[in-house]
Length: 178
Image (cartoon, rainbow, N blue to C red; front, side, top):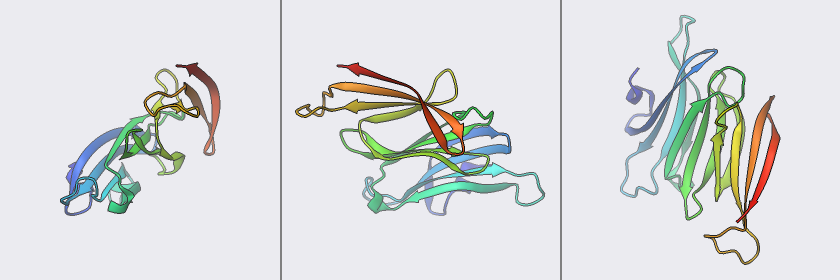
């Protein structure tokens, strides 16, 4: 299935990711609309899953669109089993920019389209799939009064594991003084 066939008309593909879920194959496509101001374009991301039930073979299971007023300047994603349920999930980042690399993160179950995790409007934070076991690693700058934006006093790293039902457990928290 060509990715351009899976996005709204008069938009452009900006990213494509593929996944295998226990419910079927998935294709995720990020898109953006046209416009003169690259910082105020409509953008979105949509997840499609293959069905074998005799209906339309590819159907959307999740998606979100951002208006120009939302000031999303880019969308990135990664697929992998972050929940440990044996099926690939989607981790998205909708960047809003700024010196703190601000934006919003989500984890989506690609089999069902359910949102399993959301952290909105964060800055100076990264959220990634845990590299060796299912889970997420949240790395956040900790600023004390008087810290310049370049120089937080500490970095807090939190490892989250999925407990089911949309619940995440803080498996480990480490704070590093800088």
